[in-house]
Image 1 (spheres, helix red, strand yellow):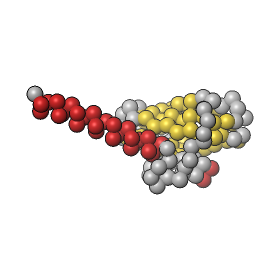
Image 2 (spheres, protein in one colour):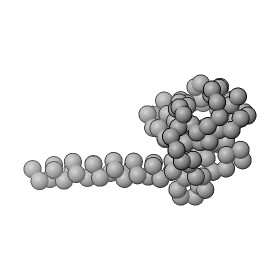
Image 3 (cartoon, protein in one colour):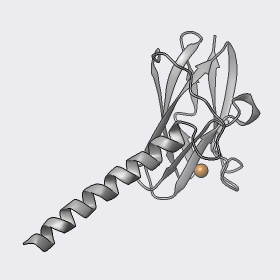
Length: 133
Ligand SMILES: [Cu+2]
């Protein structure tokens, strides 16, 4: 009886650690130098990733400002979402089906190209744009 109880507890701890690790990455911890903008997001930009695509691939937001970009992986495998030097350090990274990660971004007027930076993925079509009028 006490044995199964320990099992349940161990599982819960594992989940908490996993979430903390994800939150750390999204917040720009670790090797990333990205700092999320403060303040509430105007809206959420939801992107799905799969092998080897983003869906949708093109977004147009109504106005400049802070947005939350949420990446959800719909299949097995790993994918990322980066903007390269346009938004240094910004990187979402999802591993496995149903994995999700999000981060806020301050979008200025212009066009942002995003892609998956894993080897070969961008060339295979994992690229998209966000247009800010
Ligand atoms: Cu990818």
